[in-house]
Length: 70
Image 1 (spheres, rainbow, N blue to C red):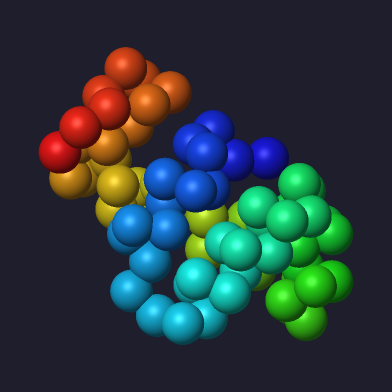
Image 2 (cartoon, rainbow, N blue to C red):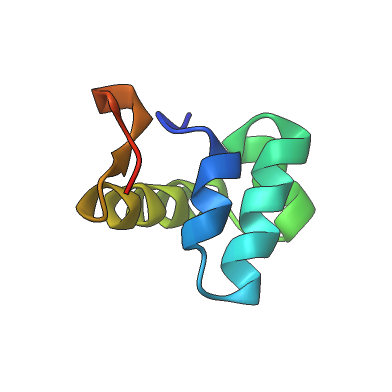
């Protein structure tokens, strides 16, 4: 599961697909269920969320590390 609240990651999503997958994670509450909703595998969801977490962290947003603003 994601270390960062996926609602925070929505601000960093650049494509409609990323937003779609994040919204699936938010509504489903888990990556496997989100994969079924978004018609992709859990691994795709995991990778997409991880990449968005890294992008957010490079911009100074990593709440799980006490960085909460850009």
